[in-house]
Image (cartoon, rainbow, N blue to C red; front, side, top):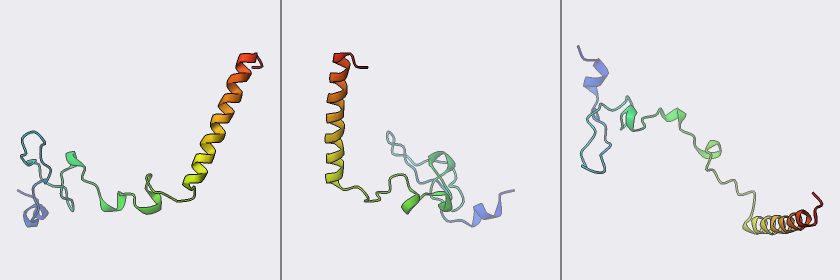
Length: 89
């Protein structure tokens, strides 16, 4: 006996396609998603957005500040290398 919510849905099949054969996945789509569980079906409330997303760009550091920090790190590395050569470490 089929489950009631599967019969009433329009998007029953996973929309993912194979790169090699271009054929659609034959698995049923997860409830409320376009793809099956094998192709990344996730609940919408678990997807990170905005400030919570790891790729969020906060804009707190300018390009000039990054360049300045890189220059200071390079100078510090030169000093550290010279101290190693002189046997100070």
